[in-house]
Image 1 (tube, helix red, strand yellow):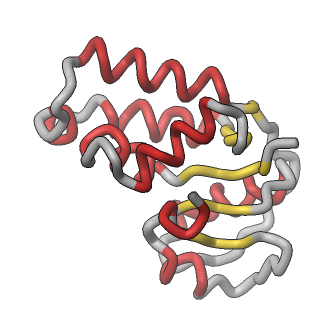
Image 2 (cartoon, rainbow, N blue to C red):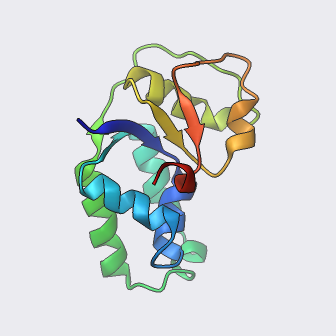
Image 3 (tube, rainbow, N blue to C red):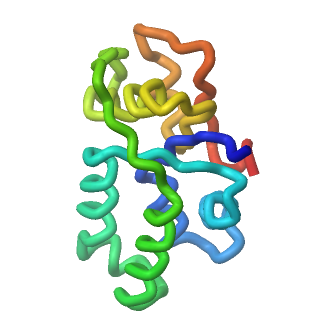
Length: 139
């Protein structure tokens, strides 16, 4: 059975613009092989899409737009769409990231994978069953 995870946008972007053998890239490979089951909702999908298509991000990618779209579409095909029915409002430092915690709780994720560990660890509302980890800690 796959481990249910939420993958923050900074990890997906890191996989696209980072080195071929980075922890970010390896995490996506583990999603492709079904070791991890990434969860997504419409908010996270639109954030992924918005940031991936920014000229400043595209300029950092060593791949063509077509290759980026193939990789992104492949990753999305591994994701499970989760509907959020209850807003927990954990009051994170960056309020715009609250939905990631809500997605993780609604989808029964074990891990939220991000490079912003500090922002998530200062939540006013704690969820002990949810681990906040960087990609290098789980691959």
